[in-house]
Length: 77
Image (cartoon, rainbow, N blue to C red; front, side):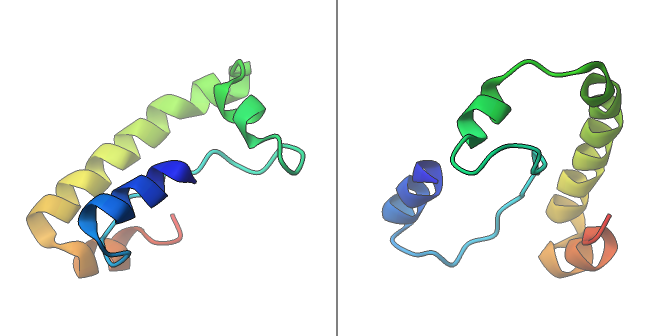
């Protein structure tokens, strides 16, 4: 992921907190870009609203409760 390499280069460390919002794994090896930048099917569009709400809760928790509390609450959900 060149974006992560760029962040690490700017920060001069790989030790930083990051929020991972997964895209799934329903793509062929090496074809992630086609999957990420492709069209969304109806099921994915339907699930997006719920996932964005969860992401909003997670970000709010990260800011207000800290990384450890947020990880305990949200990892695995």
